[in-house]
Length: 107
Image (cartoon, rainbow, N blue to C red; front, side, top):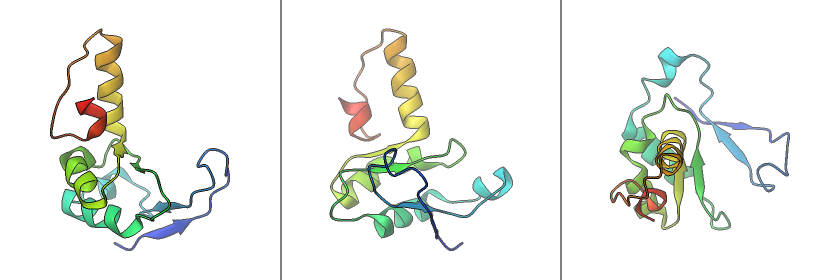
């Protein structure tokens, strides 16, 4: 799997930051991406001027390594499933802090 640079069509959405994609079109491809690959991918795309890393796609197993990504790059990292779980908990009135799944879940 080779990362492919995607053209950012909406600079305001991404704050002018470049987007990086995996160039995968089908869920059957996406679910084969290993958490270890996602960790290495996140480290490879990190930039000194980035405030955080966001990895989008509910089919990726990013939540398995979200804490390791944060530890490796020294900045917040957010993934789709982690953000969705955080939001669902807050909507349900649950304000628990969960360690080991990134800053979002621990605050």
